[in-house]
Image (cartoon, rainbow, N blue to C red):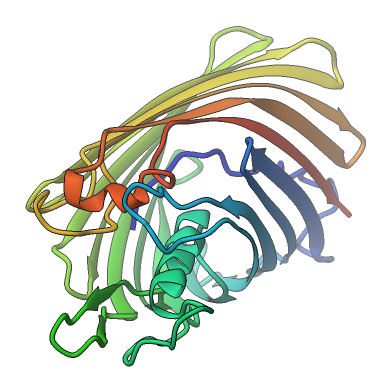
Length: 368
C-alpha cells in the first residue's frame, strides 16, 4: 500500500437544528473529483447518507471510480508492447454503525466491499503483463491468469469521551482481504510464467486522540499499524489541527509519517488557510507536500515496484453556505516527481515518469 495525497474530495456536514432526541437527523453528502493530464483521466464520485438519533448514528456510502488511460509501452525495453486505450471502473460500498453504550462511550462497527482496481497504477501494470503473456499475436503463456481485483474489510472499536466536550479517544481494529492484480515472472526453461501472490490479508489497528486545547484550537493525532501478507509491519502517525487565528481566519496544518522495515519511509505535510469573506462565503487556499523512499528493495532484480516519489499539490477553493446547504468547489495543480528506475525495471518508465496533473473537486452537503 502506498500513500498518495492526491487530494480526496471533502463533503462538509451541516448540523441541523432539529433535536435528535425526538426525531432523527438526516445528512446527505455528494462529492466528485477529477484528476487529469495528457494521457490519464481519473474520476471519483461518492454518495453518503447518515442518520442520527440521541442513542445511535449510522451511515452508508457508495463510491465510483473511473480510470481512463492511454497506455504506451517504453519501446526500448518492451519490444512486444503496443499502444492501447484502457478504461476500468471500480465500485465500493461501506456502512458504519455507532450505537451509544453510555453517555460517554460509543461502539463502532464498520464493513466495506469493493470491486475493481484500487488505483490507476494497478490498471497500467495489469495491462503490461496482459500484453507480455497474453499477446493477441502469440499463444497465451501457461500460468497466466486474467486479474480479478476486489476485496472486503471489517472493523470495530470504541470511542470514549474521557473529558466532556474536550477530549476523545477512539480505538479500532480491523481485518481485510485485497485480491490484487499480481505480477508474473517468466520461467525460461518451460516458457510458462509464475504468478505472484494475488490475495493479500491485512490486520490493522489504530488509536485516535482528539483534544480541544483552547476555545480557538482543536488537535487530532492518530497512530496506526498494519500487517499485510508477505510484508513487514507498517506504522503510521498523522496529525492535524484547527486553529482560529482571528474572527474570520482559520488555519489547518497537517502532517504525518510512515515507516516500514527494511527500507520504506514516507512523510507528508500541508496546510490550508480559510477566510470567511461574508456570512455565506469562505475562501480557501491549501498546499501539500509528500515524499517517500520508494518500494524498490533490490535494484538488480526486475520489479514493477515504484521508485522514490515526491509530490506537490496546490488548490484554491470557495465554500458557500446557506440554510441547511453547503457547496464547496476547489481546484489546482498536482505534480508527481519520480526518481529514475533501476536499469532492469526500465520497462515501467512510462508509468513512473514525472507528470503535471490538474485537479478539480466539488461537493454538496445538506441536513434535514
